[in-house]
Amino acid sequence: MDQTKDQPVKSIRNPEEKNAVVVDILLVSYNTVAYTLKALTSVYEQTQAVKFNIIVVDNNSSDDSVQQIKHHFPNITLIASDKNLGFAGGVNLAASYSKGDYILLLNPDTEILDHAIDRLLQFAQEQPQYGIWGGITLNNDHSVNSHNAWSEDSITTLLLSSLGLNRIFKKSCFFNQANYGCWQRDSVKVVDILQGSFFLTTKSLWNQLKGLDERFFMYAEEADYCYRAKQLAYQPIITPTAKIIHHGGGSEKNLSGKMIRLLRGKVTFMNKHHTVWRRSIMKVLLFTYIGHKLILSSLLAPINAHKRIQNKEWWIVFKNSKTWLRGYQ
Image 1 (cartoon, rainbow, N blue to C red):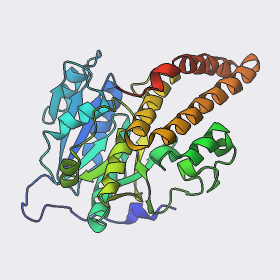
Image 2 (image 1 turned 30 degrees about the horizontal axis):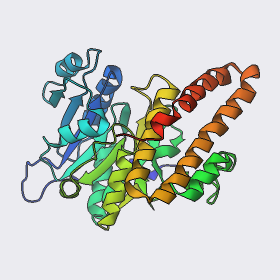
Image 3 (image 1 turned 60 degrees about the horizontal axis):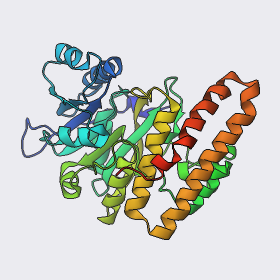
């Protein structure tokens, strides 16, 4: 049983200014109008102990996101970009309007549960030495989503992934190092990387790191931020008391497009932070991983309609290997 629902959340205020904003909540929307409206509604319904401001950047959506957000939430700060800035660029633009002591990155395809933002801010103020804080993400059916945090890519983790051992032994501390396989997501844990869907950091650290690196158009920007924060002795940490639903894929239409951007982000991180010989080996292992996925889906395609669709998507990823192996330029 989750005991946190019965525990009150302390009122969180800036001690120097009674009415000052404590946290700026930043959302970047791109053709996700229904999700975005639901996320914003949940923030207002579930956030009561902390004074917050919401800043939304719309990345030139082709749906009616801007009009709908203006209509339903006229008091938030809404910035309509005339081009798609990517996630990092959109967040940085939103952050330039922030005034609070904390910045919370929140995906538009999320829902706040049981005062999660209040609880996350309380946890951050109780553990101020970390600098980056996150909670637990749940799937649509409220089962635990294990992709809220992961370890940095290494030759070992990529080798285990390329061989499929991390999938076979999902709950193993060794074989699934990349995704903390033996952690049940029911305890406080220090992690390497915290997913950007529910990502709290201080404004002072944000300014010190100069925000997200915009060469990461989408994916791995939070990994880069966490890596740079750790160079300054700050470490991401997760509390199980703050939970959100992350629907996932709100602006993604197909597997191949998502995977190509994800791989480009990973390679960009490798190019930035690893030596030539190390990143060369890691890229080979990434390529092997995609080859393994392609072969497996090809074998299962004749007997499984879903695998036939996946096989086509993995072929697209494989054929675009020259693109993603270069990373973002």
